[in-house]
Length: 144
Image (tube, rainbow, N blue to C red):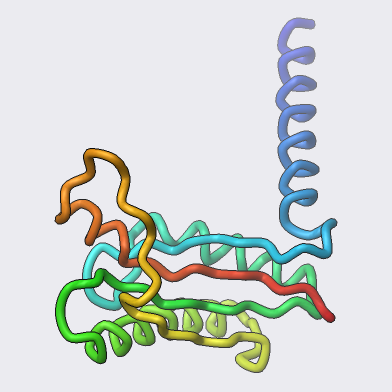
């Protein structure tokens, strides 16, 4: 009896979590946001796969939404090289979404590079802050 009750609680918890995810990822007409981290260069960090998969699943479930990918970098170095790296990062995420079956016409790639940095946290070292700046911000835009 206790085992059946436990299974019921697990099913309830999964159902509640799934409905919360639906609320966050699609029942609203507001743009939704996600972020993919990059440790170095244009290769997404290992933990990025789960985010990319979740974005692809959302786009499959909402065929009229589109994705805007903004590739960001640190602020050090040559601004053009930073924009190029930001674009390469955004294109890496776009390629992963296309490989997951998302039409490339639904994806917009932007490359602000190091021109739009995140604010630096209090007490955060320069090196830690620069590492945190390497990211692709994903905005899931509803149909207009």
